[in-house]
Length: 262
Length: 286
Image 1 (cartoon, each protein chain N blue to C red):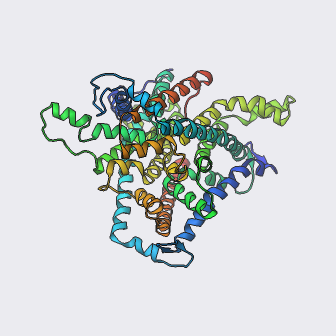
Image 2 (spheres, helix red, strand yellow):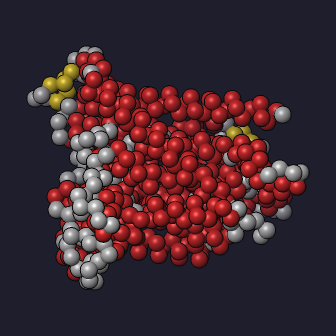
Image 3 (cartoon, rainbow over the protein chains, first blue to last red):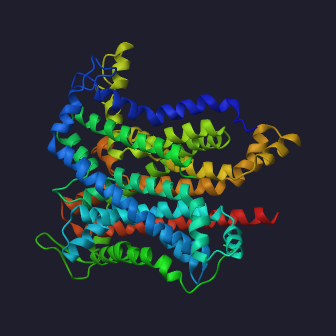
């Protein structure tokens, strides 16, 4: 490790991270504040807003029943479908492969609000009422390209001769794949799955249209709460989210030496 | 890619997501394209009678202003992200693995949190009784400064939200450039700035382009940020579409807006890819 970034970048880096993290730090701090007026620094510390969050049935339901479940299912489906697609795109050769890759990554470039509105109008035509199911349908569209990108990068950085070597030593094609390629892909898969979960979990533009009025996801619930009556239980909700997902990421990094999204 | 061989099994691999996208991406947009030429009816929402009025309406000053503002703000956000994100990406790519891990964690952390929560944080910071105004009061400023509901607030919010989308691809691109290239340039007498401009910058350009495209598309699609931080003063196209679909029930109107926005964005993306492709080719030949 002889690499050293030039020293004059340090102050710049500090400023950028301050900008990036300021809203989160403020939200977490305010969630412990004893006054409902978002004083910063807080005048006193309390857990009152966390109790208020867990006492609010809408919050609890949107958090555990909608956002968590849809996020996990999105990650599962997107990882399966995305990995299959990535293997097909990188390792197999067929007509129109490059066009198909562009098509598969195109949801990354479709504005989410347009996709949400389009799928909403499409479902209306099919007379399919919105629910957590339709939310899942929408989230799979936008989350899978992230998995494809992660796994494609993982596969492209891997020497295909490794698999060929295993096969020349007597392994069958599936054996070579499961014993050589898949273990090497593990960190790409985890990164992709984590990203798919994040995309679903933090999405609001699709959820506004597709979640259904009776089962809002947590972001939608927070959005209406901000407009209706903003109190620090919103901050408590987000602080909980930061703690849970942050812990998940740190854990994943320990287990798989995962370097996020490269 | 070189290892690939013609295989009859490719539909097994790419079929599932291909079919899925056909059903839930292509067909919805076909439906929107149809809706956009349907007649709007206050009672039945949309009547299957072909008309061009939905598109003609978009030439009105109201819509043109809305569209130009959205475009302008998104471009400013993209530039802001490039200026702030590139040095950070370079810094992270050339850091020790421990610093890089921590840096990535802190970079991705804000991404994990929903847009609406990040915007909520800005509301607390920039509000009339917010952090900044409380600080100004301590300095003796009597009247609170209006920071929210300005273009600056919307740009700040969007830059904060989209910055990781810029940093990650640029970082990946810089990482792929071997350190020995930098050392060679320095050993041959180039200053740090010369080395950077002549080796790192051109070689990491693809990362910068894909980062910019991501940031731009997220900004164009922004709804929550302008809705909460821009209010009625700084409206963007996202708000208009949201309202026409869910509150005004002018579905043909929303559809025409959607089509115009999608097509112009596709054109822009194609232009950007074409431009970088053209610039990259002679470089490689040299």
